[in-house]
Image (cartoon, rainbow, N blue to C red):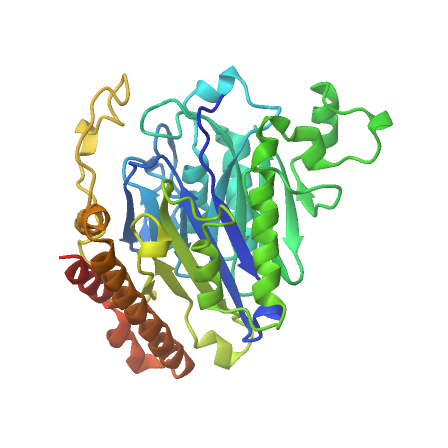
Length: 423
């Protein structure tokens, strides 16, 4: 059901691997090469009883309150590829193709990216977000075109993390299994990875697989991945193994850090960084909220908002009062006139590039004419990023009430500096 499938990779390192009491999350969002991904901030909100929420394709009941979120999202859809909320939850999703894929996937339901955003807007912890996603999946299902061209359909897996715990959630239609990550590091790619060990699952999972004719007791102990995974994508499995190897390499000393996660997301030899398809990247540092000292340290989220992390800059964002990310990573909005909202969908194209995306395009175009100059620019951008990482470590180490105003426009400030580098 998928033509020329793209690929994503999501990673998490637990405090036992980072050595600083924090969870570190990372994701590369690999999408069609010409797709624009924007970074947006949405404030917490209250809603009236009976309100409806317009997701990418369908309306669902709204909840009374939603958390503030920062999202990296394809600009044409409501949902997001990755993001975080004010409660320190970060989520990334992966496309997976399963034995439950079928004609019903063409029916417009919730996209996996919608489920991810719902989990962030409604979940105050990793476990709460997991419960939100699975409840919405079971109530509304997943389906509909996952790309602006309308010819890409898949199911989804997720890593859901906060400062205290991380979960892997994998789905096949409305069926699902979840594994709590208890130590070390974990990654997911475009294949099911949960086997015989899972901590939670959809009701009647084994019975449903038996009824579908894909499992029988004589097959041995129930293995979620073996039962549901579609082996047609077996050629992609090496990328999952490469991601696992890189995580192990950087975490062997028990001091895995934000820079290590960025290095993994930039790794092209492993296939983790798809130079023509990695549309955006995220890294999050999620402190534990256990204890008064840890509770005063906020989560810090880094986004590129541009393709190819190897030549992009990660820019930090912290939830704080009066936070503003500016306009540089916001795509044009067309409301009800958007081709994604009008049936038949995607019958025309509109301009979706934001200002930072356009500036980054100039860098890529310049590379063909003067690679040496571009390499110099990239080196300067990387130096700025490294300095920013060091500065953020100091800010977070001493974070207090007076720190909020200092970081409220930090993402916008760094985005502006990046644009100036590309002029």
